[in-house]
Image (cartoon, rainbow, N blue to C red; front, side, top):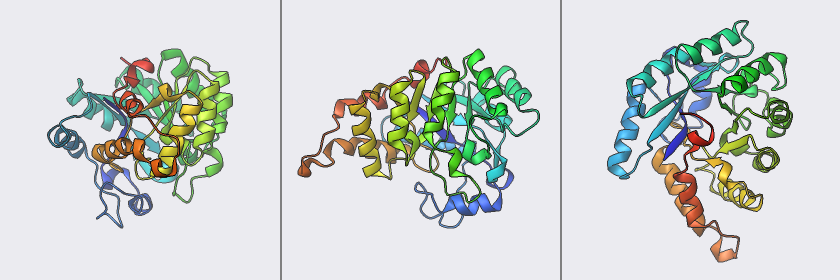
Length: 292
């Protein structure tokens, strides 16, 4: 099992007050945090996955930890912060860099994160970073990632950050990117929610586009419909397991997935096969993305 989508941060050092307040309203894993963003330090992250081994008798073999260079939205989790944590548990953790394309030294930051910090992929978001995904500055980073075999995990979906433009978040914008960079592995986070059908359409058309199902566990109807659409499009082999910790936990995500085969049975809706759920939970997503 690989969890392809998790976060860490120091609340005070990395998140602005406005980001903490807004994102705190979206927390599901920690419902007591009604007015502030919950802590997600490396220590808490590691503890959560160690507890899963005991409570669930299963835990991911590898966990991807994402940096988050999204200054426009009020959150900057440095690449060095993630790299230091990953180095403490190299057999279990994989780090992805994050670079804001609006920075003048964006390419140098990506090169440093990859070649010196040892990070294995790139996390970006047009909406959180307030940059069109076809901008020259973004294409420079795509080009580097394609040349060096780094997959990109892209948030192309909903957000409740007021200043983050949804116009830059739609998955159909990735059609042109997939065409221009056919050897670049692109992962659409959250299956592009709420534009899951659009995300799946792009995945079906382009061999280099994938998706993770993170943060959909508390949207069971959306998750169910995404699975049925992916089944009809025959792209379930390109959907990866992820939680979006600390917004959701491993237990919540696994429970939601295990319940999918029972959804809609009394209404004679199409059924999600239990064996498909197992395939996705235990898929080696990092191998499919070329990450060793």
